[in-house]
Image 1 (cartoon, protein in one colour):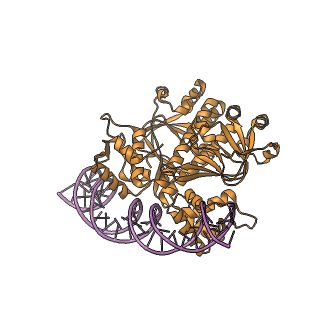
Image 2 (cartoon, rainbow over the protein chains, first blue to last red):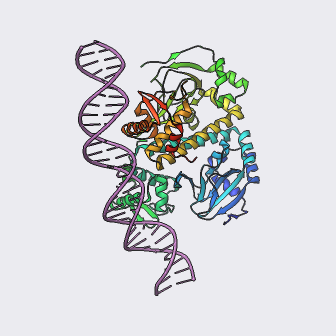
Length: 237
Length: 237
DNA sequence: ATGATGCGATGATAAAAGTCATAGTCAGCA
DNA sequence: TGCTGACTATGACTTTTATCATCGCATCAT
């Protein structure tokens, strides 16, 4: 098994992009975290943590992209969250006192800092502002999940795919050209984000391409008509 | 518009069944909550709070049953949570600083205590144990939502209906006879819990009945073969 | 009683989505 | 150079699920 590369850059420069949660911590607590954390670089495709294993801390993304995915009962991947610079992950299982409910896998070479459980919990205990920020994060995630749940139950695949493309755009943004999604997903991964079969995703993407809404170039996806996509997604909220 | 009935029973007797979250509060904080809360009885069908409105506090269920439901973009109800004695609700929007993402509607005559925002937030701020319990609750809910999301994306309606029946059983339990679900849902509500069309739910329930798994008597549902139901739900986790 | 009304049930049909099979494309590599 | 394997694409077909229409059966207010 390939191991991540441990690196020794000082993370002081990281503070500028600290996650909302850690950003609320008092200076002293932040210093404590800085002292104790361990940073690593994971190559594309490497797993940061595995579904079903026990959490020993939380992970803060310094730079890179990560998918959180959960295996369905029949072994099919469902991607439940996407992480980007400044996001933290692993807190759900930690706070539930649970095992990980999903695996975290690097979508590209990703620099991640590990904060040991004891440090994180003690800071959380002594820093009400940070605790509130943590609750806000959890609440926001819960809200997102419940919205997605409704869409999954009620919307056709076509609308969900459009919504997913917009979601990817919101999360990772565009490249310098202002139209190409700044991430590479396989068609299967997009399908596992939408919650549909790979072939359906391919077919619908072809349709979007035919209608001039997107342009496809291998794994590069250009969004030519965001307004059309938004209309196709048929979102009210 | 019919208003809920305000009642003046002392809620000291309620402490025995206080929610996990409030149960963790220090004695003094609990007293403070007891002082400030306002209790009401909502008749079956009455709305405790409306999706889209602003939260002014949280609600604690003294006794009764509540559904939390969210309207999809095309106006179809999606039931996202079920509440029972001792549960609290309304915290998601409060902690996110959001409007309510769902409406809370009484499934039967329900006794609910309202805790004003300021009281709840101040207790939360000064009571780390309760804050942790709150985070645990949010994390558990998030986990549940993400599991459901995967099932919604990957499992056929038949399995989801079986799972939903088991979920109702877990939540509300049986009547004294040990087989009849202790709640009355319309077929449409079950469908909105499963995330499918009402007719599909009716058809599948008929099949379950034909196979001797359940017995139907109007809105009364008896689960005759829980093991069969579990097998039908095809759950791995 | 009576006629609404809502709900449950069921059949017929249509639409949506999944599955299976196959073929093309491309990058990496011996 | 040509092979290999992974990914994309597409057609044919099946299955699942939704939709539409109808009917029976309670309940309930008048």
